[in-house]
Image (cartoon, rainbow, N blue to C red; front, side, top):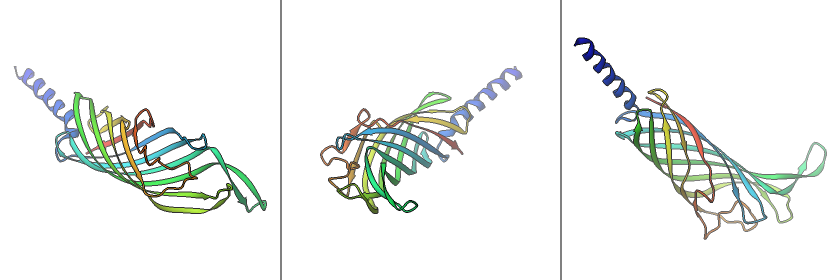
Amino acid sequence: MNLKLTIMAALCAIGLCLHAQTKKGSGFAGVNISFGTEKQKIYNSSINNLTFTPKGGYFLRDDFAIGLEFAFNLSKLRGTHYTEWDSEYGIYQDTYGVKELNFGISPFVRKYLNVKHFLKVYAQANILFQVNSTKIIDDEGYLIGYDNRLKGYGASLSPGFAFFPTRKVAIEFFFPIISYFHQDYYDEFSAYNFEKRHNIKLALDNFMPSIGASFHF
């Protein structure tokens, strides 16, 4: 009888430990990585995006967390080129792939639902504030300088999965199902512009899945 009670108590303790990773008062920290290609209507070009996102969160209630992400995004424009002065050889060189570097701060809220003790699904809503650094190209395709400014703000809604191989470690996969971005500046010659009339995007328009890992404490 004592053995049965001991086994039942142990199983209950294990169950509590396995579900403790999203309990009220706990937190998590980790990083996401995403890569995707976005088609552009201007210049018959496309943009390759690579994003590295450190993040942290805190559970206000069981299975409900708030947090903050810091997104570092490098994008390269394919299909266009510019001319850059090569100081080593003293000549102009054609360079393909205009690059843009973005930095974003993004508060979020996240709600989990239990599927198994080691698997949860969640929905995450983000608000994004983004600053960019880009090369300025003139009408003739020459590099004339660099620009740093507030790019704009946006929001997104993302479903995801969290797999817990251990009580404190989560492997995550998610993608934005719908996103909105308002760009604060506009250059009619830039392929990086979000079209003013089409700044709401669905997953099929710009599919950028992310994979990440989090440590829960």
